[in-house]
Image (cartoon, rainbow, N blue to C red; front, side, top):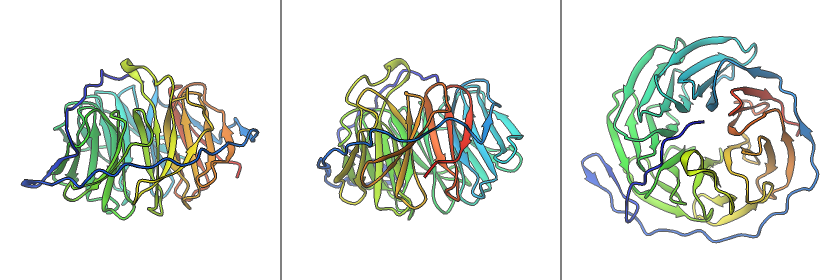
Length: 351
């Protein structure tokens, strides 16, 4: 995976602009710490994939299932977005964006795919054909975070320039420009009810804010290091976030954490210790029932663990390099993971 030098965007307090006027931030809520969970010392491992996709020539950083689970879209350092069958691995189409692709997202209605890359633009593609629909510009750093609204009408993009833009997907009109972070924004997550967005940043915070007007809701500081990944539980009650860094900044060498916290209050509910503090955790995904979390990072493995107790249930060891992303299938039966080793692997967790 290739990154540009991360340049911060100075900001004294969470702020945003939506429509014609700026919103007034609410007071910052700082999360409290919770006891650390002790991981299970021994757990089963799996190393064989049901299907391995080798269509990319370089690191695969972003993946997303189609809503019906029949296809996968993947984005890579080879500049391409590729759609392919999750049953056969046969490629359906490939689109060259002309830049590194760091994030992809399939619209909930199944019609469009969004891709974010190193040139700071968001590319919208027809999910069936791979044909270009639109290319939206306006952010000056690479796009690492992408999220569709649950109704597929808006697309949010988080940038290295420290901003998150919420656009009308059909017209590209910027509806909210959130500028609350003081450094690069990595992954972002839309709340299941469509009301809020959570954005993770190198400034060491996850910030929750209203997706319609940019009003700041809550700032979580519990990770204590640059935050790479954030994921909202399907039931809307919890958020999990993890630390990490890459590219010219290098990885975070110590103090890495994975935190599960209350999405309403910001209270830390669990610290997962399955990695130790040396590993950067780049991938997080909730199971469909909000009970389990899959996580991956620079130890080349994916772990599945209980979101309430922190107990490690199993680990997947099929990759030979950094795991950049992990996603559960729509039916919750399979997991797909992508890696610096240029593969996407689909496998069945042993639960």
